[in-house]
Image (cartoon, rainbow, N blue to C red; front, side):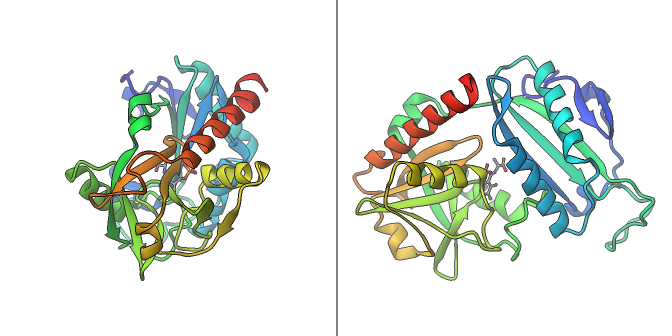
Length: 291
Ligand code: PDD
C-alpha cells in the first residue's frame, strides 16, 4: 500500500492490491482522456452526499454517451467496502470510469463488446491545516481555456492541470478561471464572493462544474437566512469583493485572501467565510459523525 492509496482497490469487479491492479495502455482513459470521475469525502467512515455524487457520475456518463457500468446500488457497495477496509476514519473515495480498451486506436467509440474500465480507491482525507485556514490562501486569475461542457466531471483535465500549475508556480493555491469577462470557477473548486454582506455564486451552466459542496453552501446560507444571489459575477466584482472563497469536497471552504498579488478585502479571511466554515463543520458533525 502507498501511504495515499488503501489496499485493496477496486478494478472491474474485483478488489485487489494496487500493485496488482493493471489496465491496458490502450485504455481510452489513457489514450484520449475518455472517461469520468468522482471524488467523495468520507467522515467517520460515512460517505458524504453519496447519492448526489453518484447522480452526478450518472449525469456525466450520460453527457459522454456512456452507460453506467454498475447499478447505483452496486456502486454503493463498492464504496462501502473500500471505506470499511481502508485504515482511516476520514477518507476521500475516488471513482473513475473510462470507455475501456479496444485492440486498436480509433477516436470513434469502440464496439459495444469492449467493456468499460471501472476503478475506485480510498485515500486519507487531507484537510487544510488550521494555520493555513486562519491566514487564507493566495490565488491567481487565468483565462478559462477549457471546452464548453465544464458541467461534466470528465478526466480530460489538461486545461485545469495547466491552470493549477500556473498557480503553483506563483506560490498560489488556486487559479480562478475567467471566461468572456466572467468568473466561472477554480481549476479544481467552485468560487463564491461576498460583497456588502451578500453572498454571490455563479449559476450552474455548462461552463461550471455543479459542485456538491456548492449545493451545501447554498443550503446553509438559506437555512441561516443569509442574503444570497446566484448570478454571473464579472471580473470587476471579483476584484472588488470583500471576500472570495473556494469550495470543494476536499478543501471544504477556504478563504482566498490575495488575488493576483492584491489583498482581497482586508487581506484576512472575512467574517462570513468563518461563519460558513463553522456551519459546515456543525452540519458535518451532526449529520455525518453523530447522525
Ligand atoms: N474537484 N469545480 C471543479 C473544476 C472541480 O474539479 C471541483 C472538485 C469542484 C468542486 O466540486 P465538489 O464540491 O463536488 O468537490 C468544482 C475535485 C475535488 C477533484 O478534482 O479532485
